[in-house]
Length: 106
Image (cartoon, rainbow, N blue to C red; front, side):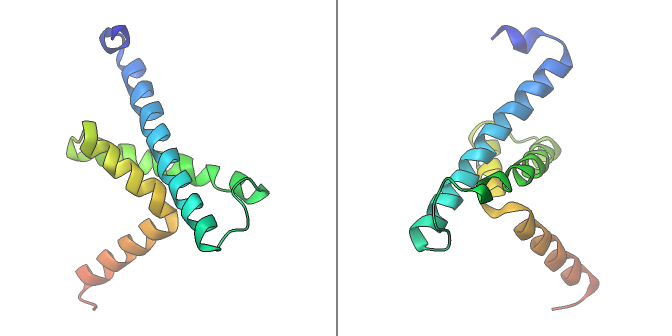
């Protein structure tokens, strides 16, 4: 691909866009599961627009995790899907649980 030989910011932008696409897939799968389970009335609603700031945040989180651990390919995509599915509240709960565990709590 010609963009791979370009400047670094183009490669970073393509990484971010690719990760965002995978995060959106995870988010859409979660919303579809919520509609199926009756937790959400319908798929296309005004509430769907409230999910997009979370997509941006989770894209940055997934990209950071992938870069930090040097993940790419299927493993990097799996991290992005998990981030899209779980959302910011689940990540916050996991970080809080890890912090409590490190501090000596149960």
